[in-house]
Amino acid sequence: MISVQDTNTAASPLAPEWLAVPADLNALHEPMWAQGVQRNDAGELAIDGIPASELKAQFGTPLFVMDEADFRARARSFKDSFDAAFADICGGVDVYYAGKSFLCTAVVKWVEEEGLRLDTASGGELAVAARAGIDGARVALHGNNKSDAEINRALDMGLGRIVVDSLDELDRVARIASARGGQAKVMLRLTPGVHAHTHEFIATAHEDQKFGLSMAEDTTEQAGLSAAEEAVAAATSYPGIDLLGLHCHIGSQIFEPDGFALAAEKLLRFLAAMQEKYSIVMPELDLGGGYGIAYTPVDTPRPAAEIAQAMAAVVRSTCADLGITSPRISIEPGRAIVGSTTFTLYEVGTLKTVRVDAAGSGAAENQAENVTYPRRYVSVDGGMSDNARPVLYDADYSAILASRTSDAAPQLSRVVGKHCESGDIVVRDVYLPEDVAAGDLLAVPGTGAYCWALSSNYNYLARPGVVAVRDGSARLIVRGETEEDLLNRDMGV
Ligand SMILES: *Cc1c(COP(=O)(O)O)cnc(C)c1O
Picture 1 (cartoon, protein in one colour):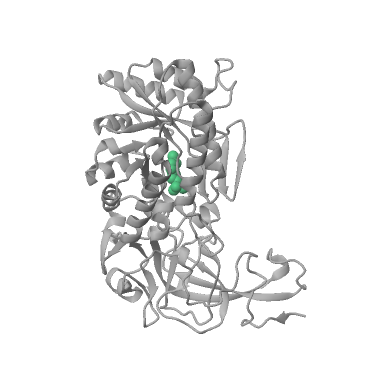
Picture 2 (cartoon, rainbow, N blue to C red):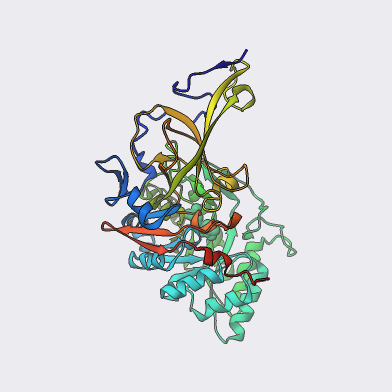
């Protein structure tokens, strides 16, 4: 016998354990949203006073909506917190915004105006930096397979640092710089054997990943030398290389400072040993990015100041222990600056409710057999083409009804896109009001990082534009694609 559970009941057995039924479906969980986002008196989601319906009317959906003041505030907060924490250690910290998270010329300008620098990882990202007119000395170039053209472009632009990823590349950069009759400012990316994600980190001796020079010994042909040491030795012998120092990046969406602290300690010990052994000074140390943000109510990121203080404490004590002067520290936050500044606005289209057998759904055990529970599919007018993270990384997001408030009961929902792919999920599990209907607007917060940047034209969908809101007015900083754009590169029959 199949019994049917009342849809109005609160927690659904199909929901993951972490997902609580919100006490108020209309309330905004603050850590997930930009500062300027609120509900207005009419109950509509509004940013800096501009209601969602107006954004929809002016720019269409899907749309990335960004709070410029919030971006600037988060950028400043990293700069100020780290400067303060490291003031007595190395006179402050250079903060490189990781452009790969979201980059356009307007953002480069904001980054510059707030006193930050810029990280790039390709010739295309360098082109955006050049178009925005940022001083090359404030730009870094990453990548595990830079082309000769990219290296030349970096040298043309007078880049502040090229972060070299391998022995092969060190050789290539040295040759290109020498041929040009100059020197390349280089940092060596090391893999310290610390991998962090959210609440955990693991420390391993050996590295099995494409990035970086391993600090583990016996990994190279020169017995006993790590790839990292071989690179230091080579770098100091090449006339084309000005070795600034060392770099590491241990992961992404990290909440706890322990992993950063351990990596900092490992790199400092290595830096001190190399300085002594090769009679050199490496004046800089980059500790990468990876600071986490809130995608759902259970994510609890730490304030920048707290992370800064924890990292400063380790750098201070390690340098004291080693009897060295601390190198100038730099960091590379991307997600933590831009992620929460932006929400994606979608329009709801098709809706359907399926009934799912809890036993076969991976839901809570000890559910009686043959009992089914409703899951509502809410289709929106975008999907995996504007947010690939759920498909790529199983990433969780949240969503809220944006065009109005509702007193209807919470219903476990799955927000899906319009692509020809059953994995095309935007928000896997979220409680939305039961009366959500076609034409309603939904907002998904936390889409500032790695969403527009990873967007595609799958199914010939036009990629959405990005609107920046500031002082109560909205302007496009990247326009949405048109049908013309979609057909532009098709060479015809
Ligand atoms: C991706 C990346 C970053 C930024 O990571 P976030 O998680 O966005 O802070 C910084 N440095 C390097 C080398 C990266 O690859």
